[in-house]
Length: 250
Image 1 (tube, rainbow, N blue to C red):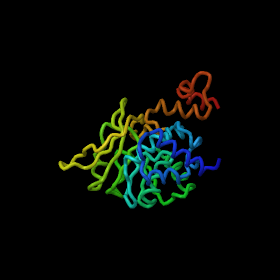
Image 2 (spheres, rainbow, N blue to C red; image 1 turned 90 degrees about the vertical axis):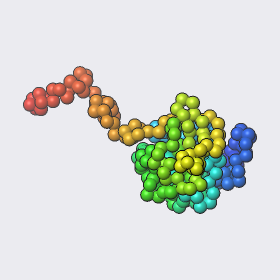
Image 3 (cartoon, one colour; image 1 turned 180 degrees about the vertical axis):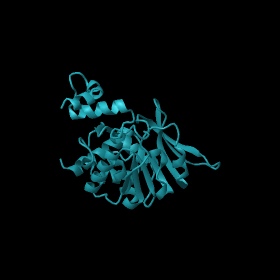
Image 4 (cartoon, rainbow, N blue to C red; image 1 turned 120 degrees about the horizontal axis):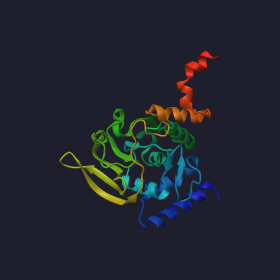
C-alpha cells in the first residue's frame, strides 16, 4: 500500500477506536500530514521513542488535537516539540506561520525542524526553550498544547493565553487526565472538558533533558568517560587522583 492509503485506513480506524467524532479539520490534517516523515512504524497504533523522547501514539495525538479545537489562523503554541508530528497537524489546521513549538531538549528541536522541513512545514517556528516559561516573544496565543504532565498550567503560560483562548494539557502525575481549560471570569482558568486518561512524562526543567548538560560532576564525568570507551583497570577515579604522577613519569 502507498502512504496515502495507509493514512486513510489510519483515520478510519481512529474514529472507530476512539468512539467519538474527531471533526473535519482534525480528520483532514491526519489524512494529509505524512506521518512517515516523522517516525518509524508510522501507521501502527503503538508509540515509538526518538532521542530519549517518547513519540505519542496516534490515538493520544488525535484526542489532543480534537480537544484543542484550533481554527484556521489561530496563533498556537506547542510546548514539547518532540519529533514535530503534532506540530505539523496543527500547522495543517491553523497555518504554518501561526504555529510555534518549543522544546527544552536541543536535539529534539533539531529533529523537529528537520522533520517539519522535509514534510513541507518549514514555516513553523521551532525553538529551544524552557516549556514552563512559554514563548513570550510571540504571545498571546489562541491555543496552547502542553505535551508533558503538570499539576497545573505554569503561570507564564497562563499569562500568554489570549482572551477566549484554550489550553490542553495532561493534568496529574501518576494518574493523568487530558483536560481543556479556558480563561475564567476571576482571572484564573476553568475546565471546559476532559478527554480521557493519558500517560505523559513530566515536564522537565533545565538539566533533566536527555541531551542536557549533567549538573552533577561525578555523574557527568562518568558519562563522558563511558561514551569515550575509556575506563582504566583501576577506575578513572584512580587515574584522576594520580594524574600528577602520570605526568611526571613521562
